[in-house]
Amino acid sequence: MNKVEKIRLKSHNELTVGRNIYYCKKISSTNTVMLENKDGLFSSGDILIADTQTDGVGRYNRKWHSEKGGLYFSILFQQIDDLQKFYRFIVLIALAVKEELEKLTNDFANLTIKWPNDIYYKDKKICGILTQTKIKGENIKVVIGIGININNSFSKENIFRNPPIALKEIVYKRSNIFNIFQSLNNKINYYYDEYNKDNFHKYLLRLNKSIYNRNKKIKFTKDGKTIFVRPLEFAQNGYLICEVNGKKELFSIGEIE
View (cartoon, rainbow, N blue to C red):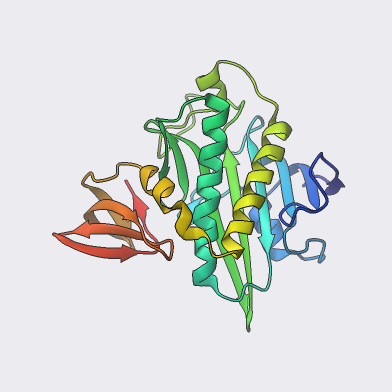
């Protein structure tokens, strides 16, 4: 692993998320390093960015291909009082990424949230979001990792569970990764403020319009079991309301296929 160093970008000092930003050229996993925080380097709200990850992970410990050209970073939150309530902010982060990509692509019709942790462009994955927690006594630590395909390429030899796409394939040019990060960081801060003001309900309409394969019958995997559901809308607590065998059910975790 290369040395982790503190950097300064154009972000404002009053930001809560990203007040301190750390950078590393190559790292095992930004999520893992922040979650362990062995040297006590990171504080709540800090961000760690890396050019590449050698052991990037997705849900169920699947490998996340983190080659140079993508935007990979994690955010640390410590001493979370209510993990269930915090879930609303995690959903708002997905909305922030979607809206940032809409601005970059000038495409407001084809980007969706493939609940709970992916952003799709049409039927291809452009972003993955992974949340990991560590609980010790009453102290709850949460790390949210975000990986966005920006300028990276995908070799034919790579085997992907879901077909990927990078921003450069949509806009037909390379983009400045750090400029994108700074703009996205500002948007995440905005939604963090809205979450703390208990304004999650104001964004339900936007979120509901963003659901991948909304109102379509799809496979849903939870606890290793596959069922067929119809995603309908987000609930006030950030959970997903689905129709299962004609009845509405709430899902907090799972995986849409």
